[in-house]
Length: 93
Image (tube, helix red, strand yellow):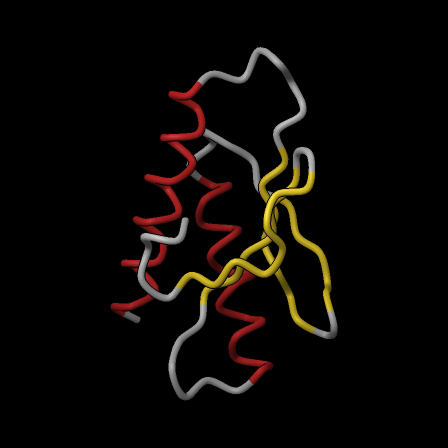
């Protein structure tokens, strides 16, 4: 996640959950919350992985939660690919 431009890690992994958000220079908090909602929805619409969200300090953050010991590295790579693609798409909008 840290290699994707614009991604801020909000909560580093604690057991199985990582929280992050996309940040675009010059956006208000409301605009950032909307961008992150769109990021999460765009990834979820691909139906390869499913991301959830939380509100931390009034900020909408996206969460990755891996709870199954059967989750393989290819699923995590697919998740990062989808996040990277959605960030690129948001950059174009």
